[in-house]
Structures are given as structure tokens and as C-alpha cells.
Image 1 (cartoon, rainbow, N blue to C red):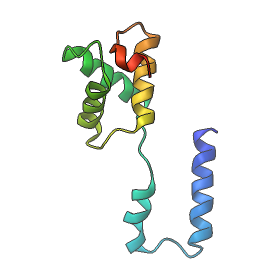
Image 2 (tube, rainbow, N blue to C red; image 1 turned 135 degrees about the vertical axis):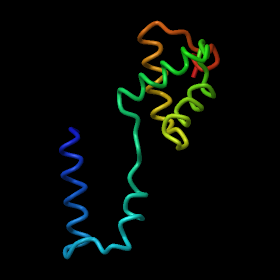
Image 3 (cartoon, rainbow, N blue to C red; image 1 turned 60 degrees about the horizontal axis):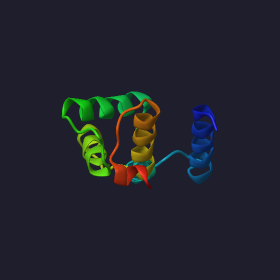
Image 4 (cartoon, helix red, strand yellow; image 1 turned 90 degrees about the horizontal axis):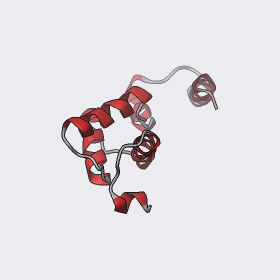
Length: 101
């Protein structure tokens, strides 16, 4: 599903739930429901951080720490997997234990 389709569905959902607009006190709880996902550029930043800190071969902990430092949030499993796939696809070494998962 394209990003514009996702945004359209979110806006439709909000309009159904709040036909007269979102009350001011509901903005923060609604934003908390949205899950942040690393963008492609951020995946590259994580990998550059791993290289800079000599954390190759990378393991799950190294990747999780790099994501947390970048986003100031706990890493999502899907983002950790995206970083792992990018490392493998580009020939960067990963920890053997992680490679088997």
C-alpha cells in the first residue's frame, strides 16, 4: 500500500471518529498511537554509526543501541530487521547468532 493510501485511510478513520474535528485534548493520545518507522536515510545513518563505532560484525544489541540513539525511542523489530537485511544485502558482516535467526 502506498504512503498516500495509508494517509488517506488514516484521515478517513479520523473523520469518521471525529466528524466535528479532533478535540484539542485528544491530539496527544492520537499521535501516541502512530508508530514511528525508520526511513531509508535513517537506516543508512544507523549503518554509518555502526561503521564509525567499529560495531561490525553487527549484532542485535549494536543495531538496537544505534537506532535508539538516532530516534530516542525503543527500536521496532521491523526496523532492526530492515537494518539487518540492508547490511547483508550490501556485504557487511553481521554476528553469526543473528544470521541464524
